Image: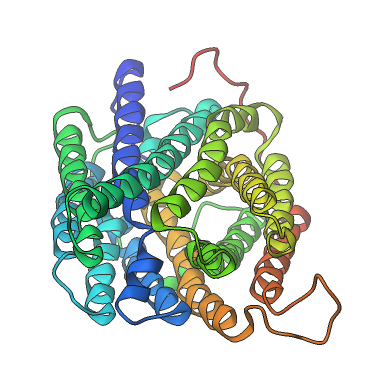
Length: 430
């Protein structure tokens, strides 16, 4: 077993700078995410094409997250995070080149490669750097930073689009390109920041043996309950990924169809506001999970989040829909750091990179199926009569499927996963 190489101050520095990297990368992600559905529509696509665009990203990330996690165990986390960050910056510029949605989808797929190098590996490095007792707080910090980036991003992206189209005289198509240039700049800043300030917490293990797929399901050093926990968490990751992807990437398109007069910048502000309220609770929720338990907080947040998903199409009034989006976001951010800490507590240290990568892959494979399925359902059923009285309509179908599946997978964790006893939290955490 490799012991941590860092002092307490170095560990805190790692967590803080990796949280900053997550903020910067997510800022770029949030800049363009609410604009993608409208950009795709401008290039001749619809709900299905939005789903395919999202799936191209998560498919490459799903395929490569576990191999890159394995590689980070062998060559070190920092090196892989740096490569991914620089690649992310380059690909942001390439988004401005395609003139059709298939070309945009190709670049988006390549961006998933960069993402697989950054997000699961940086999470593994945070786990390497902090003690078990403060793991929830540390993971809550990076979740909060990531979501703050997603919050600020839509406001900046919408603002850049507005300035380019209304004041600089650019066409609608060219105005959509401005946020991509800004994304490239912030990703480059993030890469340079990691290069200067982050340290690997454990020595790379170049001679570490390969692990078969069967061993990823039943790794050595775990008891029967641990193996069951891991299998349930794999299943939860896949189903939760499907559930969120079947709705999340299409939320901007749903608002555009429900309220055709809304402009791109206004939709970005709505989504950013809802996510902002969610980001505020991530860090305190992570700290709370260190004290009252990971599973309890995950279950509470998970149920509330998926109930909010089901209720969104019944909102009717825009303000009510915004409040439901905020509820969904806040509840998800209560559950997310608790789930990540629960996964980290379950995974053996010696194979942490590989298993965290595998959990990320399972989530992404679920998302690959969920995003186009949500798009198909939205295209097929939006505002259609399904033989039920008002306020029921076909619009509820993708939301009901997403929320119902999410409630089912949270229930699986509630009934089958047994949480390990944790050390008492330290007074000061990373």
